[in-house]
Length: 329
Image 1: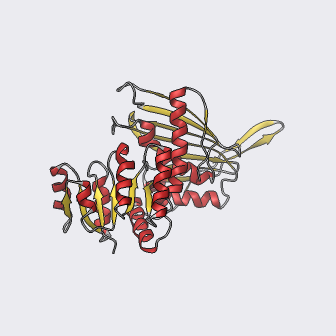
Image 2: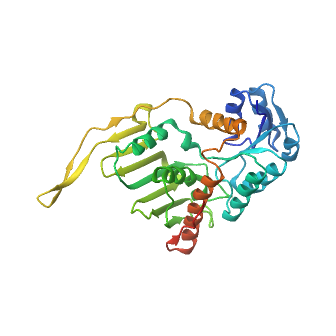
Image 3: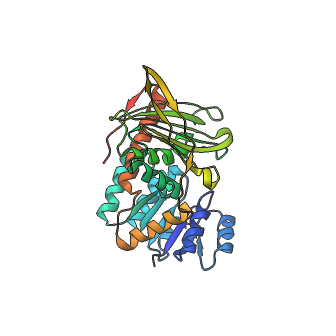
């Protein structure tokens, strides 16, 4: 069994530690804060605590899971790969496109697994939505919009775009099957002058499809929703809803009669999906990829496509006009 160490025990790290422990793979955890280490090791038996990242890398583990602030990801991934460790890093891989390319190349050169935590790619409801699209029930995709809104989880190191939007961009690119060619982003900084608390990004694709991503940590309630509109039907993935309403297919029909647009409304159809916890599936996928030397679904190449889109959105946010999305592998 692969021996895993989790670095970073803030908001998300303890969830990763819990899942890898349940899979029998967790050997160690690392955080500079003693109380964070004690809280996790008190709940998870047989786990060694470390305060220093280099000490964790020297603790006889095979793989490291990085759940530290996004601004630290690139440097920690590089150190873990140099130490010969397989790496699972929470999104985003890093905040710089050139650095991401270098990390992907380094992992490939060393024959090490590098996987990025684009969690919703492993959500059973999203996988069922992918099957709907692949099976043609929505027809040709026309546009996708996503909302990732909540009150809180305010960052100082990264803006709302980089903190929230990677999940939505990864899902949109997976459904579209291609990367956007142009991005336009606007936003507002209300709490800190250089950190956007809310952003709205518009993405244009070569095949005519469009998408937008609205993210904010200054919203009165939680709303995590992805809506897909096609020529033959529509669907919504509402991650904040109860299971029965989480994934709905709408067989609405829109056409023309006597040169006038007509709409035939139809009742929403709940779509069944597996009830397994997405994070458990994601962690199991990582361990399986390490064991089989298989390519993760959210590998460095997939992460580069997401980062290229986010990079274009960030440049547009700063420059105030649409920008081209840099091509990624």
